[in-house]
Amino acid sequence: MNLAQIIEKIASTEEVKNNPPVLIDIGASEKLNSIWAKIAPFSICIAFDADKREFDYIEKNDSVFKKQYVFNKIVVASSDKPKQPFYLTSNPYCSSLLKPDAESLKQFHISNLFEISQVVDIDVMELKNVLSQLDISIVDWFKTDSQGTDLRLYASLSEVQQNKMLVLEFEPGFMDAYLGEDKLLDVMNHMKGRPYFLTTLTIKGGLRITYNVFTRLFKSNTSKKIASHTHKKTPGWAEMVYMNTLEDTSFSKREFMLGWLFATLQDHHDVAHTYAVNAQARLNDTIFEELKQYSEKRLKGHVYSLKSLVKVFNIVLNKYFSKN
Image 1 (tube, rainbow, N blue to C red):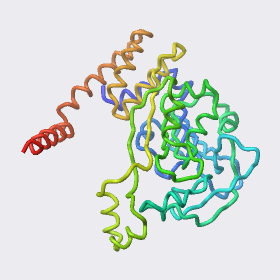
Image 2 (image 1 turned 45 degrees about the vertical axis):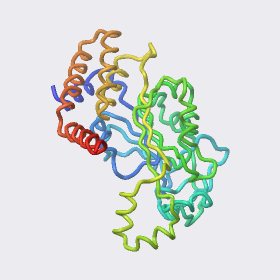
Image 3 (image 1 turned 180 degrees about the vertical axis):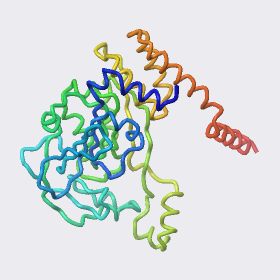
Image 4 (image 1 turned 90 degrees about the vertical axis):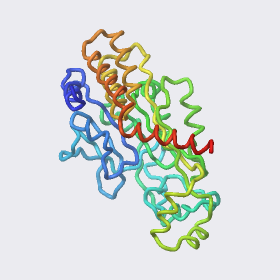
């Protein structure tokens, strides 16, 4: 059975049909996450995309999702006011409720992206109120890139909601990009002792060189792009993914199937295999034998894939040249 057939089988189970996966995308972009595209037809998506329209949220009927809600407000952890100042920056992906830390940022070649172009009062709503409004108690995949407030958004939910999610995606900073932002260390400290383990930690960053010097050295847009992509950078922020241990005895067949699927879609076949084995031992359902077999096939097949062979070749090559 291939993955498309397995996805269809999982989607057709009563457990998933009656209780579809719930995905939250805070700081949503126009481009759909390629992983989510494969589960969209049977999932509920809640996305936040601020604009100037006059409604609290819309239910999109033309969406690729089974059901999608798009809110035109900025989501916050808590607020006693209906509006908050929002800092629009030269690069829209750097805009935030938090003021950019210009003094710290001036050390980096990307400081121009954070230059404030305008401050506007924008409608806000609390995350817990959104879920209440939609009558959603548990979120399965929580993805946030809120420019400095990821942790406080997650922590604003109840303990049960925090501990029942299957996948968590954060993008906290190392460098001081915003005043009062949530940092990577804050996220890791908060997650300590919770039923999650880190599956991905991708470090991103910038050149520790002022924007003026950068533009003097690299005058054309082409040379700027090449320099920005090829030079070694200092850590600025990180893309983090946590997955649930699924050790809580209240987790059912649904959570194990979705956990397996979410891990598989992220190419974490090791994690998926562990989920399948544990589910098979606990629930004794034949579907988990099929899922386990698929994971084992992918784990073994990966060893002889072109990507793996290239990696092994590079390791051998580096060892050879390091000795000579």
